Image (cartoon, rainbow over all chains, first blue to last red; front, side, top):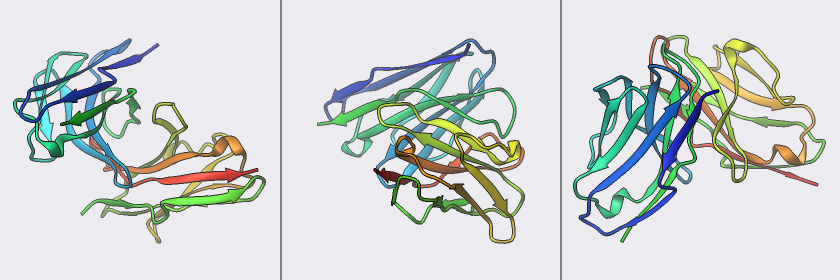
Length: 113
Length: 109
């Protein structure tokens, strides 16, 4: 069966420090991969998605970037964190193809001090 | 612009009462529509999608293209239905999904 792992679960970082959040999927090949930010009362904001290795689509211009170095690995990064980057980040995957339902990880709570 | 609106942030009903979580969307074509649910301390997960026309955990949702709505309904709410519910839209042929702000359902004993 397919599983998704996202880590770390919580992270506290100082302003200006770098960031790397990792997400991996097991049990499927060539999944679509997604990064979201979830804010209370505002739903899920899509940040990046990827339909293949090295293919990244950015939805919101910001201080973050994403990479997909391997088929089932998706990384969310920043070179210098801002206070506004605080939030809850979710990784998700779907089977290859369009309009497929998504499967979510447990999320990472990021606090910037 | 593509948008999903869930007008109620919080909905509170008594156990056994009918429940309807509202969802309206803005999209020029025929989208794929979903309802996701997040129970306390659990992952966000798919509840149902309109193309399946299924009833999951007693919930149903009907797509009304004239009103551009996809309301989630259950005739008799249970305490275990208490959760956060998100309506979502995926443009036809697209890879991304647009989520509403969510409605927290609280079912009282």
